[in-house]
Image 1 (cartoon, rainbow, N blue to C red):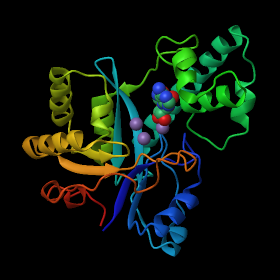
Image 2 (cartoon, rainbow, N blue to C red):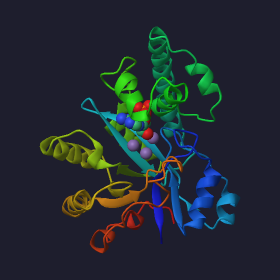
Image 3 (cartoon, rainbow, N blue to C red):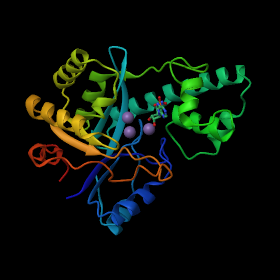
Image 4 (tube, helix red, strand yellow):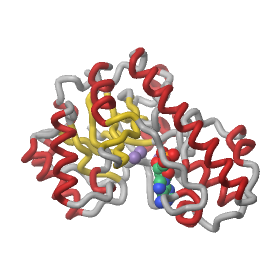
Length: 277
Ligand code: AMP
Ligand code: MN
Ligand code: MN
Ligand code: MN
């Protein structure tokens, strides 16, 4: 089994279609893929997946709030028709729309027009600041995505708008009620000290969290080792995925992340009782 359980399509801030991801998975001998778009359950054509001999695990990546810190939780094996989860994700996308609208207003105050027209040309259903960064680069207002975040979109930027996400516990509840497995995404990417990070893990577990990602694109060996040890000691299942967005970012690819070590593999997420068989 070769699984990539975290990646994005152009329905959120990825650059490629779900079909591209399936085709790339087949090329790379990936047997299981979860397309985990931001706050949207991307529909995947079943017969297409069969044609590519790839098993698709229904997935989503939800942005949520834990004590004023944004946290990302991946839901895997969810029922994509679950009413409650669908409503909650719609609310998240509405909050995203409003945030982008407010960012647009701030950009206009800074003399930058055209964001809403830019969005009309995109297939995305879930709007993100990543799209805005691309707009700023393509309209030559920023020299890079990083520059777009530091000058405009980040906390100290001229067009910063804070986000209003649902809570971590609401997120876990909704994923689990939809039959899914709740996974803490890229745990090393939050700006938390050791004590706060431990508190996050504790709360996540308390609120029904099942698993943590221990490997992802760009992770280093020491961090992976640490996360695997945490998973073993705190009895979390382990998950992993590339967080792939864009083939033009040539240092990333579907399936590109260090393998889970054999010790941690004993707790691989596919052993979870709710893993779709
Ligand atoms: P949002 O969910 O609207 O806040 O957008 C977040 C997305 O923007 C993330 O999923 C990343 O893909 C991207 N992103 C966030 N911060 C940065 C950054 N500093 N530089 C480049 N991309 C970023
Ligand atoms: Mn993203
Ligand atoms: Mn994320
Ligand atoms: Mn992601």
